[in-house]
Length: 429
Image (cartoon, helix red, strand yellow):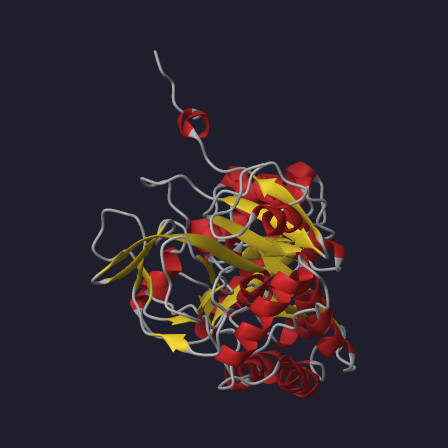
């Protein structure tokens, strides 16, 4: 077994006892954090009378080892392509939502055969859905994605505006299609529940005395999408977690990590209370059988993964590590907390952390919690599980391995990319 740079042989052996190699850079899937995030979300919803179901968006993080934990907790799948749909079927997701801005006939046919809930994004998809359901002889649920007035032309292709939804419902009736539910998505990094409350009030108006009143009583769900933000914990909390992580794989005394919201964001319990209260007040009077659906992505994925890198060099401009924006593409617009696991001190070293790519913007942080990093130090970039792995490009450096950690046991769940993997799709004559 290769020794991780910065850890001695015995520490490395304990930390990665069940995998063949631990060469940095690699991602850590913290199963404890993943399970805790799922349980806390479901618990926050369960204390209210509002019936609720959750679905995880595969685009946020498609790592099978993580998806298995999510589905075992009782959370379904939300997918946006046939590839994701096939993966969800392979993962035996209990229930699947198929949603994308535009859908081909083949995609809708596959979704119907998989008995997925098909979210109609535009009027021109209705004949395709009719054809698919007739061919599959299936009773897949049909939902309508609503556009609730979010500005900007980049959002104009998502959903049906309020003034057009009545015509779409009439088209469905003429085609013999039954509307099962409604869906909307408000964006990302929503730190307070107020936007969801406002949106549910608007949908409630469409159901009570608007163009959806005729179908309100038969609705099975209203899906409020995802977008609940999470930015990790404070510096001290991150340091506590880093120490706990090392303790968990060393001598002992580990206290399970509890993913925390930012101090500038409402808690999970506050989100659940506000959203469930609005659902009961605005939706259920008109649609008494409707179930609240949510699609939390970042909330579950972000605190479940971390990136471990090694310091390769110390330069005037900062330190250079062996993983950059090839592994953390979101670092271009998000700020991640970085902990020096080799020197875990309660102070911040103001130092730029650069990746190894031949690009001027390959920077992942402007500070490190702990002592000033030196060559060979091990750094951990915290809470990187949302979108980084799914959007990681095949560029210059190999894509990283993923190590899944459960209690004191670690195992390799994704191999590091090599040349055969990179060339596997090519036809070389």
